[in-house]
Length: 333
Image (cartoon, rainbow, N blue to C red; front, side, top):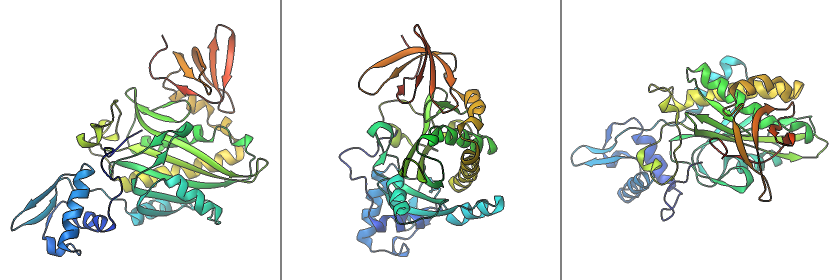
């Protein structure tokens, strides 16, 4: 998804820089002496924030100003939204981590309960499918993971990431963010460009029970400094609606919808989501090219997904069922 910051910049922020970020988040001027850290730490924080695409002004006699403020995640706002809907989900928010999926898988191995969620303001080494790296900008999107413990076997969990995609679209639509579509197997799309992605990873016995961690990354509002190094067009929620809900409200609704979807999946599997997924399929009835593991490729018309989440491709040889691969954007040649 996003590759940011530039390779020559350390993607990690100093811990004191997050303290300064929280103090400046309201967008007001603050005297450097009132930021709770040393003057050298303030200078380092300004450098860190600017390196990560945030506009910081320093005006003599007024102090330090984060030009656009910062929409930081509030665990209290998220918890209130979850409580209102009666969902048994608990959230922990980190300033930064390499990967919310890796962190939560480690927590799962130590016995973390089902419904544990982890989010961070800056993810520096997130993982995408097939070993791809997935980095994201500071406070420019949502990167979070949710742990779900299932009695289903490993094979029965096929399609869970597709069900999660349906849940994400439902959450966005509940907040008047419409027009998001799904690209098999795990991409959120808007306007033909990638808006977000999903990665499901599991631990446990093949015959069950399983601990599944589903990681979500969604672009919310990207600065030009974040967009510049990408090398390819992407989308963001700000394109859909200018007056966006806060990231806390977004995260709360996403967790609500995901928890409900996982409960349904536990009882009925992906078959319960198939019709909605087909309705949201960005490439339904289009001719596509799928890069397969090992370097091969398949071409044909995408006619949807099977009850287990396999992509159905109509080819010259008949209907093919694909369980893995990367679908290109745009029609096949």
